[in-house]
Length: 71
Image 1 (spheres, rainbow, N blue to C red):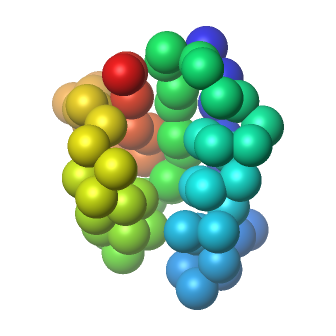
Image 2 (image 1 turned 135 degrees about the horizontal axis):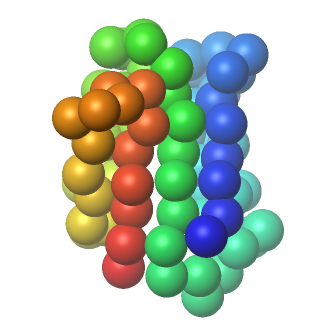
C-alpha cells in the first residue's frame, strides 16, 4: 500500500500533489492511504478530488486524519 502524507502541503497545492502521486509516481497501484491530519478543509479537498476521479474511499472512524482508497 502506498501512503501520501499531506502534512505541510498548502491547500492550494493539494490537487497538484494528488495528481503527481496517483498518476505519475504510483500508476497501477490498487490501494492507497492519504494522511490529511485533523484539517477538515484538507479532507474536503482530497475527497472532492477523489470523487472527481471516481475513486472508492472511506475514512476510518478510529482515525479521521486518514483516507483509505481502493480502485
